[in-house]
Length: 490
Image (tube, rainbow, N blue to C red):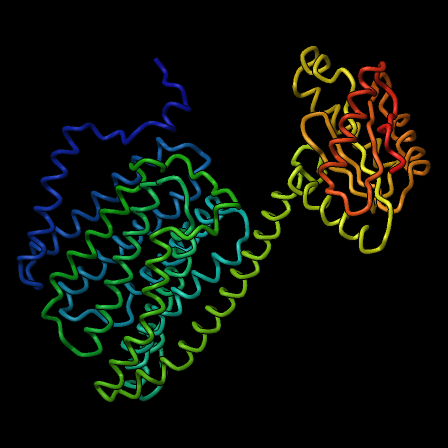
């Protein structure tokens, strides 16, 4: 029976549990052998390369089960993995044959080529996870990369450049490794600091790349100082990184990289906060080291890197402040506005009622207050549904706005009831405006309006109460009319 392609794509790792248990025992045992045996032991080389070749084959077997939508990503990572294993085999074979392999040699050419596969794979994965361009994410990734670059330049690239008499092919290849590591790290930082649903495959890829980066930095540093006593442990890290990358396509999330919503791509997760905090502290820590050891070479690399990090932090801070201001304005607008109609809400109405009344008293100006209530709205809502009722409210507001002066306050008082403030209008002129509002209703709909003229220095809520009484009389008298309270002339 043929399995459905979708089921295959979404399946969990296809390795049986028994084999997983065997692998859980054999892998640590193999790494222990690598750690214990002397660096020049043939068995150590054989075990390490067998692990690499086996991991590459397992990686290739998993590729057949993944959906075509992610093949481009995982084939790039497989190319990086397979190329690294091939380069390891070439390097070890030349070591056995010649004792000291040439540098740069054939293995270095393959090693450097694998960076292209890693970069393309990470770029494709990043674009799939974060298709939206987010400047904050780029700034954070740049801060992390620059901080680590200061370490690399201080302890690896700087000493390498100072140690060579002329910049030949050997020096170029020596510097190329840490520089390409920084390129990969920058691309990786862009992918892992964006919040998303947990993706174990991405986590394993990230951990593998970080281990590889750490291996390269320590390896190059040991080459600078000429100390290889810890090389066996480095080989364990290198082999472990290859194993993690081979296991990544078997992990949850390998078959589908879901994009992160743009709204959450700038959210500061604990991982992002820790990474940024560590990046910011690297510069001061290196400065303390440079002062303590009187190593001026470290200070030379720290100066430009520190300026760039501070500049990025200032840029990030200004963007953050602008975002906070924009969100504050949006929240303030939401607090003052009815989300359905876009009119001022009851809270804004109360504020504008007192403000307009105070201004009218100061200017010795008249003020007419009117309340509008849609006729038979409850019946309309019950008959046609709440969505149709909401659309009807919006339609009524749209019609009223074509008649009403934009400078006047029209607010949603509550439910199907609305309020209007008419400063500077007397009963006659206000009545004309309100009559036009009544006649501007959508076809088949009507509105009842109650209004009053506020007395001088009167509590505006008392005037609203009189307008509400006039509205009640308009409803009782048959609806679809404008009624002023009996004392509406003031």
